[in-house]
Image 1: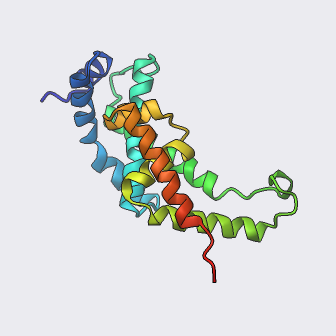
Image 2 (image 1 turned 45 degrees about the vertical axis):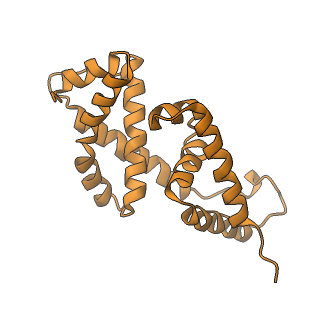
Length: 181
């Protein structure tokens, strides 16, 4: 398969599932380069790296289709995709580690300690979810990806995506449910 930069752009702009599938296959060849950079940035969790990279692919495809990306003589898609992945990781990292102002809390009586405890509990609960549930929860709630886009990216029916998010929410509620002692 021809995975030249020009061919990838043509495939992304071409309507149809087959062309999109081929373009994504070509873009996945850039994952090694992106992984190496993310490891240097301190991201050692393979699932997290993969998640950030896949979201960078989606962002890249959207930018190409909206005319926000143009090939120049020196620009290479893998380099661009790797840089997009790095920026998304840094943005996510900054958001997760951003100190919250006391007055920005929804409940003025909630202490910083209890907020941190809730964040720790939520992260632990997310780790208990299976990969499919975690993927859809993170995509929907953390990245704001709508279900239609998620379904297209995963090549599943919209109704399937709705069922997955519903089941994932229920599983997350069960995990977060307080245990009675």
